Amino acid sequence: MFRQSMASVAAAAIMSLTGASASAQQYPTRPVSIVVPFAAGGPTDIVARSLADAMGRTVPGANFVVDNAAGAGGTIGVSKVARASPDGYTLLVHHVGMATAPTLYRKLAFDPLKDFEYVGLINEVAMTLLVKTSLPVQGLKDLFPYLKQNAAKVSLANAGIGSASHLCGLLFMSAIQTDLTTVPYKGTAPALADLMGGQVDMLCDQTTNTVPQIKAGKVRALAVTSSTRLSILPDLPTLAESGLSGFDVSVWHGLYAPKGTPKPVVDQLVAGLKQALKDPAIVKRFAELGTEPVADAKASPEALRAHLAAEITKWAPLIKKAGIYAD
Ligand code: ASP
Image (cartoon, rainbow, N blue to C red; front, side, top):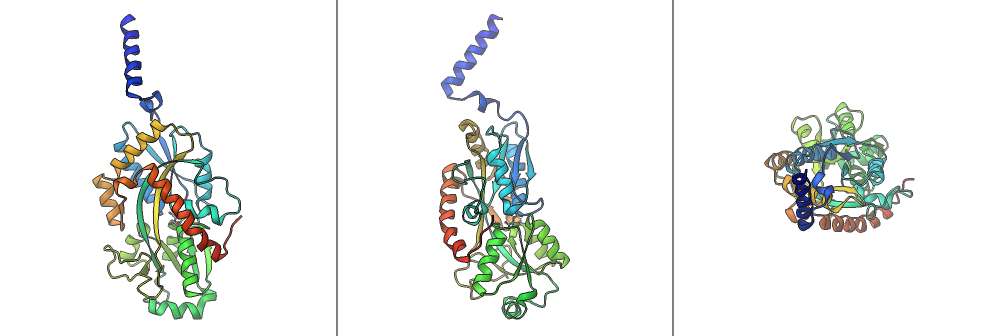
């Protein structure tokens, strides 16, 4: 009895000496949910599942489970995390949509700069401009005149207002000064399935979703949205190369927790994220999909928050100029 209580006094003393709190010592004791605000099988989902798998190895005792809470351009899933208990058991993986939502949505149930704890950036990835294989267009040279002549009947899929595919489509339509019919989905996994099935004509989506289908010839890729060509798809020109000067869309993903999540828990997640991004399995998986983990310094709360704030500032005037708003 006496021995036991001496042992617990000693343990408490060690914990206070090292500054470790009980919440960090005991975290996690049950599965941790990572909310993805888009449909399963799409690019955000692929990044989150790869990360969940790697962090299951780098956060001691952890089991990360992906929860797809899709809809309204990602804002439904983000709201769910903003309202979740800040105990480290609900996290969010989201992309640039976190930065576009405040300008695009008149009513938003969260504030990206106030309602979250920031764990770190994960990766950056370019997008590809795709058409269905039956569209009579082999390259960008054919696409521009085809769209001018057929604008009224060409459909462009996206993952809802504020999604990366929506932004890419907006910039593209504004660059070619042609409006197409946009078709919203709950993520680009179902949009890509419909593109392969021929139900929609065009889609702009991250390489994380598109590389396998491009290589299998199930969709036709016309260009990449980055400022330089990609080594994974070396024959694809950039949109900028093809005359749409300045067209540069790169999608970034970050890992978040609800505001008020205890710092020792966030610290544990940051350490797990940093290690996970060096995991050979994730590096290989990302490379196959045309992306790579961010450098170590960017996998940090400060880097994610600073990047998010800069992206909100960057996208606001472009969105306002396009005059697109959602309720
Ligand atoms: N790629 C999608 C987007 O356009 C989202 C997703 O399904 O991951 O934002």
